[in-house]
Amino acid sequence: MLELRPNCECDLPPEASNAMICTSECTFCANCVNNVLANVCPNSGGGFVLRPIRPLQARREGLGHNHQQPSQVRVHTKYTREELINFAVRHKHVNPADR
Image 1 (cartoon, rainbow, N blue to C red):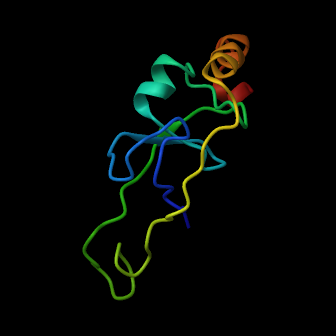
Image 2 (cartoon, rainbow, N blue to C red):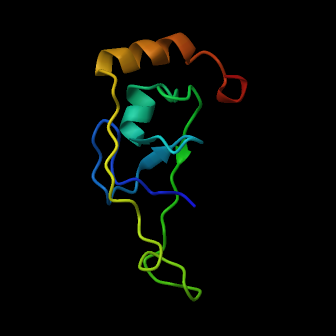
């Protein structure tokens, strides 16, 4: 199950509906993914997709936001903005499926 991390690793409000994730659940806002990272995860090198939203209301017993709470652990990138950009520039020309 996705952790649904509460922030962009560069800083994203937990309620944001524009969160993007890679297959390792690295989480960034769409603005960072598109304008800083060029769709290159600075940790795994993969691409990003829109993170799903966990329903607030349980549509089936035992499921939903109240039963499966999103993570409260905030994760921040260890890289500077310049390092993120340099990494993205080196890898953005390669299709995410081929990285």
